[in-house]
Length: 242
Image (cartoon, rainbow, N blue to C red; front, side, top):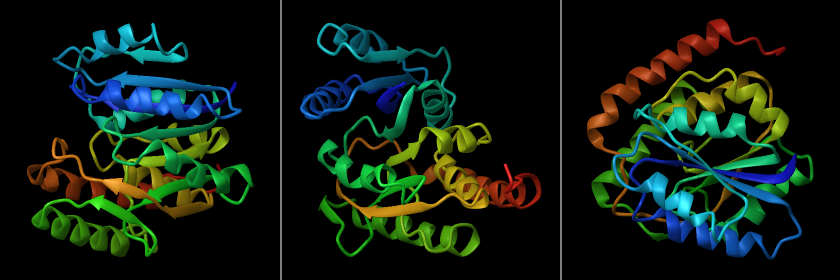
């Protein structure tokens, strides 16, 4: 095992992922940790896979897992997290909306054995949104989070931030039970963690909106349906004494 695995789900990320990988690699190379990067392609139709393969000339600890179909972000994250070898495993959006410098804060609860799961949050008092989302997107996001808190995850103010870390043990327990492939996979991950009585820390982070974000309001009906599916399955099928 290595000390740290970082997983990037990637769908048509040829324009953004190279910069993110170089920034992450430069920062982590100064740390005393062994680490690996795993890019899980999600059926990209651009040059994402070829580009990442070429980056291996500069980044030795880089693996790319290609896919022939677009299965969804949740599927890509799940594949990468379970493939990883790190004692700690973090997944990050390929756009680097949360900068790599925030990783020290995220990993601290895991390193000190205070938590099994540590998640970045954009909505805590000490969070710093350096570039906010458009107004209507912010309204939609906050309303959606209120619904999620009321129905499934009370007390977690930002379940969707794409910067989440897990111990290896928690990773296997949680992601081996996940089924949701779409954007709402984060909700399933955290709901399973709660059901398994794992400790979750929510950490304020710096975050910047990327205008190329692939999340769309048209996905909302599907995500609402997934929310009901998760709640029903969690309450009936997950055994807390895993």
